[in-house]
Amino acid sequence: MSTSSTSPNGVTTSGTTPAAPVTNQQSFDRARGVLPGGVNSPVRAFGSVGGTPRFYVKASGSYVTDVEGRSYIDLVNSWGPAILGHAHPEVIDAVQQAASRGLGFGASTPAETELAELVRARISVGGVSPIERLRLVSTGTEATMTAIRLARGATGRRLLVKFAGHYHGHSDGLLAEAGSGLATLSMPGSAGVTAETAAQTLVIEYNNIAALEQVFAEHGHDIAGVIFEAAAANMGVLAPQPGFNEAIVRIAHEYGALAISDEVLTGFRVDPAGYWGLDARAAAVANPDAPEARWVPDLFTFGKVIGGGMPLAALGGSARIMELLAPLGPVYQAGTLSGNPVAVAAGLATLRLADDAVYSRLNQVAETLSTETSAALSAEGVEHVVQHAGNLFSFVFSGTEPMNFADVKAQQGYRYAPFFHSMLDSGVSLPPSVFEAWFVSAAHDDGVVSKIVEALPAAAKAAAAASAPQ
Image (cartoon, rainbow, N blue to C red; front, side):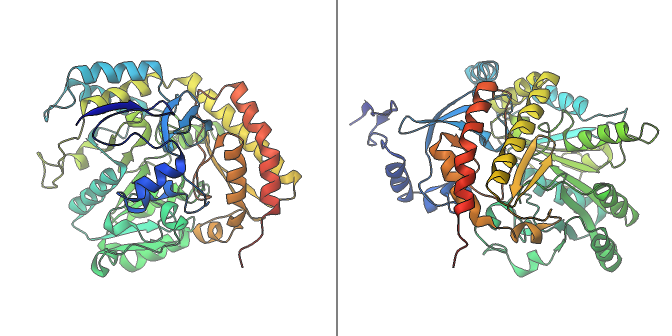
């Protein structure tokens, strides 16, 4: 018999299923009965910080609300795409209008072209516009997987170079030393990935030009491409050393390989033109006589902001390389949901609203919060380093600035869990892992920022009191 009921937390359920649980613990217990680990993405299980994961039922502006009806200031922001804040009225209106016309057609729509043209226009600095063609897909993993296949198809080579601690999705060849969720779970790779597949990926140390030169000297004739996060943001935030990204592109091209810049996290968040644009503009300010675009990757991958919170991602690059994709070329990629009209509507609305005022606010909030958090930790004598890549930031509990994944893993990471839970108890939701970036939004107004700052002293005391595990 079909039923409809409203639980004490205000969630309406219908059908034959029982009413929604009224606590986070009840929600987690129920989820573990049908979902592996009770989650559909590992970091959500709070394995790194302990305690009960929050189950959210609503989000608006800078707040999220859990099944118990408690609201938290959100510094996760759906891992980046809520750049305008949650449920921005104009984005929601665009989604609702698109949905009213149909959820999907399995055919092309004019809006896909509009989004591709918008991306091409935004990824442009000083007359350099590297996105001539764009292919829409559904996830960042799909975008990076396709970019790698394209690099192999373009070069006829089999090997891929990646950097320890950089995360490019969960496709088989990319999980070794991948940071983020794997770092949280202390896993070097993944079961189910064959030795033959893993052997096609060469993992080297981040920010180490000598290591990059050596791997190409030894294997350059068989390397199809180098994939790299434009700024690492899955082992905490760790920006490239000056000239490192430029060296990646230069060395790859010397050996006839492709450079693939993964901007799934940084794209359209740290700058209208992503980290590539941020770096190019900084270079122009530092040296007006030098070319702005010192490094231009062959391929870019995008996700998160490009979909405005909906499942949407993309890869793009020159027409010469991108038109190797089917139907024009021999490299196959397809997807029923690629360019889904509802997701494209969310992406178009978000990118159109993400103007200079939005980026100015993001930068201001990020600077204030990172400075105030650092001051609170310093006041309690907690060793730490603030890591920045534009308005992305995080903290490493160490007295030494990290250069690579090994340095990040050597930190006093045990201090983060008590810090995290103190902030959560004060109504501030942080990323549930020390290996993740903090994400602000344009909806974080001065009042919200003040509430976050008020919660920091107690959290810093909790971090200072933490003891290393025995």
